[in-house]
Amino acid sequence: MTLALCALATQAHAQRVYKCSDGQQVAYQSVPCPKEQDTGVSRPVVRDPRLTTADRIRVAQESSQARRWVRESAGYDQPDVRGTVIDNVVDPQSCEDARLRKEMAEVFTGRSAPARIDQEIHRACAVR
Image (cartoon, rainbow, N blue to C red; front, side):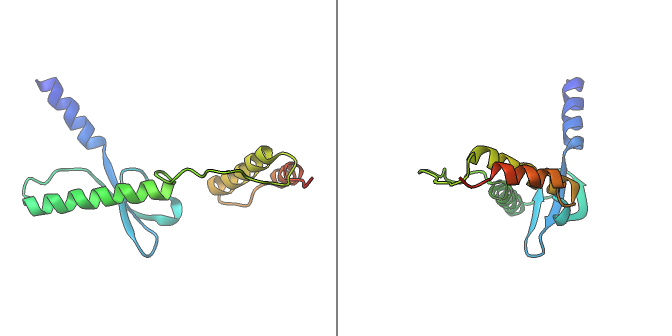
């Protein structure tokens, strides 16, 4: 019994809520905020035994809305695009991969991508 309680206490202590803001909306999420939305505010998750039923319902709705916002921001739950993509580049897949690498390099480093990635995009996205 004691071991089970210790395990639960460890899980509750490890969870955190992060407050993110894009200037217009505020979101609370369980993963760290993107750098441009970080408010510097995070709190451990704890349950308040003094919450009324109405407050618990409100908190559950806000949590659900925050999770929905995070999923939408990440592109989940979006309808699949169907149809034929007509592209006049020699190798559309290599072109898309190179552009994705450039975007990832810029996001993770915070600087513009190296010139070699731009050259790779130029080669991969050459028009037929």
